[in-house]
Image 1 (cartoon, rainbow, N blue to C red):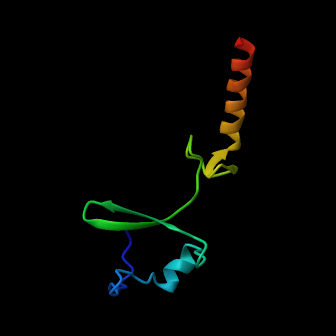
Image 2: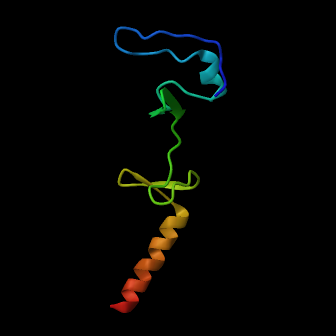
Amino acid sequence: MKSTGIIRGLDNMGRVVIPKEIRKFLDMTEGVDEFEIYMQDDCIVLKKHKPNCVFCGIEEDCIDFEGQLVCKNCIEKMQKIKEEIQNIE
């Protein structure tokens, strides 16, 4: 991890302000982008959330299907499975 030398405290609601320089570097947009929050050893890690396919995890070419993202490749695979099932019946 790269140290920025920036130290921030928690407010009374447990919030921390992410410095503008870091938000700009990550191309974060207020009210739009989200973070994943997790523990790694004794650290709290904030990672810019990148939506991905629920099946294979790829980030590109995803389509929302009933609240879940599915990539075009997985959709094609599911269509082939559907055709195979229809051929069996």
